[in-house]
Amino acid sequence: EFPSFSAKPQHLTTAMADERVFNFSAGPTVLPIEVLQEAQKDFLSYKGTGMNVMEMSHRSKTFVDITAQSEKDLRDLLKIPDDYKVFYMQGGATLQFASVPLNLLGSKGKADYLMTGQWGEKAVKECKKFGAAQLACDTKATKYTTITDPKEWKLDPEAAYVHYCANETVNGVEFHYTPEVGDVPLVADMSSNFLSRPIDFAKHTLIYAGCQKNAGPAGNTVVIAKPDALGKELPICPSMLSYKFISDADSMPNTPSCFAIYMMGLNMKYMKEKGGISYFDEMATKKSQMLYDMIDGSDGFYSCPVEKSCRSRMNVPFIINGGDEALEKKFQEEGKKVKLYTLAGHRSVGGIRASLYNGLPLEGVETLVSHMKSFMQENAK
Image 1 (tube, rainbow, N blue to C red):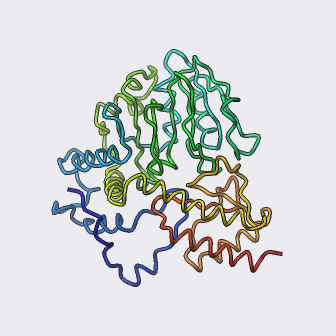
Image 2: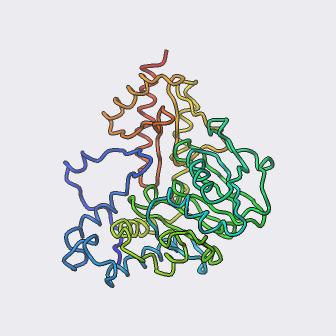
Image 3: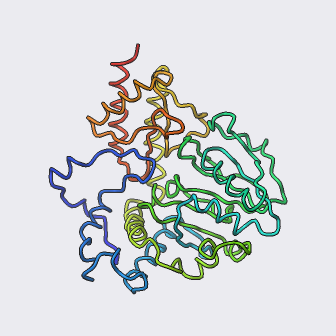
């Protein structure tokens, strides 16, 4: 039995509470304190077994039950149709950039990609090793700050699939709708907005997500697939990248990321008890709107390069005073005094980036906005 999180968090010692910071990291990232405490409670002996979850056999009934429960709670949260397969893989979403074409290109040998950020670009590069990756949409010329109007997409009705990245972590660009691609199978990388909003499964053939954003710690990747997406892999596809092989083995053809699966399971249980996807969807809007309102109301002191229609609710990039690096460094250093950590933009983009995943409390965003106000008053010319 997984624990109940309905009770208030266990009391933290003053020292422990003082050490916790507001972690805006893009991933791995903050997990709810209740989830961490539950894992801490069972760390030396999980439910009287005398061992930690990461020490026990993945073939044991105890761990098989942990995995099954995590899948059940994930299905409940997202309302995943019963016929869709859910399985866990390793290698993160990045390995899926190769898995997808290896499993889905088939005899058609070509696929369409909606390239709206750096992760979509990496997916295109990987697909080209196995077939033709056609750019139905390419926003690189805008430095990935927009999503092209769907009317302008160059979709090929003969493509094996259409791939898109639902939320670009580096660039802060998010699809706020499901792309309409006709009868061609739709594939989504949902790593960084997974579990923050409902998913229209009827329109998707395959969805994958690295877990280290909203689902749990790093090391586990969720794949959700229509049954007809399995069993079509190319002859060169390694067994460990074959969706059918992994699914048929119940995610355990070899040792999986046991502790990551366990932690994800705890987080799924916690999310259900907090109110499910609707609660976290509402919180994502509330937190991101608070931050964007601060940026937009700063008279240009803070600015976000992303077009308003596709701004991400999960990853908010912004620059200070037109990209003043010294000022941005000062902003981060002074932020640490009020427990604001890991606010640096991606190394390829620079500036500031605040990631507002499910585990980040509202108080963290309120503290960030308060810091932004006082910093602007002190540093605006």
